[in-house]
Image (cartoon, rainbow, N blue to C red; front, side, top):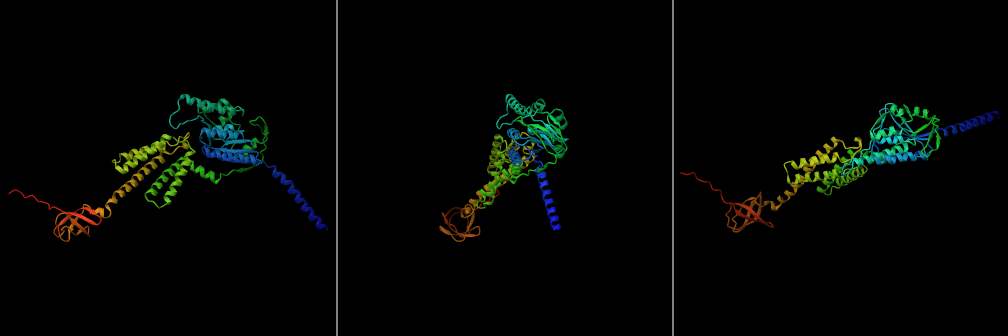
Length: 442
């Protein structure tokens, strides 16, 4: 009986211990972490939207965005900053690790956060807008309008976050950049932390003011961090949005489609080439494209085809490769260098594509010209020899073959002849006049 009572006490104790520990674990704060180490473009916009939606739905205390970006597209930046400002869950933007930056568009995201933080050895700023229009360069008035509009957008929420609006505007109109300590001294960020745990320790118990004016106390001691991993779709889109990859897909796909047209029935080159071209068009559709560069690429293709068909002693091919190089090099109107096509990639692709195109087209033209030299029509103009007297019809030997032939004049056996025509399988021949040798004067 005592053993049963003792066992029941142990079980009751275990249940009580589990019951006490469960609420403690349930009260452990959750932090969703999203690592944004890329350019600011539609793909990263989709990733941020997914991260904010996840944090708003799983009961996270805050969403931590670890930021390292050179910048990106202005329109995408506005959308992403708006998503951060409208998040129900507080957002911490943390420029980390050491050596990271929040350049250009990244500065707007840093300032839009409820808590802006930087790690030692990082920098932020240089946020002057760079607008590259497809057909023309904006004049001074247009540049001023864009700059004023961008400053007003930044000022609209920097003041609500109780940060230094003048210092923030200096990053726009003067492209000023700040170190972590300078940003803290200028009241552009809230704190400097070396890692996530130091950041959470400094923020635990801090009261923040949201965009709607409401107050909120942060409880981040012992927080559990869940890092949001990119999906397969996001990984694929991030790979495709690289302009160098998009250019290689476009050029490679075009060559495979051309090969399919000249070797019909192979199917695989055509299908693969079509897929590559469609992927390239989709990727380039996510980037700002210069249409003048597209026209240069079309002109380059025309010049290469003319060189291959008519020949220009290489002048047309060189002009085509130059047009193609300039077209590919300036194809993407990139606001930051990381979103532009590499000069080495543009030069290598242009030279390779130009050489391969000229070579393939010349092979096709040569094959088309050789078609008339195959079969019986190719015998016209050939030399023959009469195997028997032709008066007017008989048999002749042509290219090692015996053919029926007819001559307009009688021809003795063994006489040299020349084929002058063909009527189905009957050759028309004529005697070959013997060459006369001039006699030297006596």
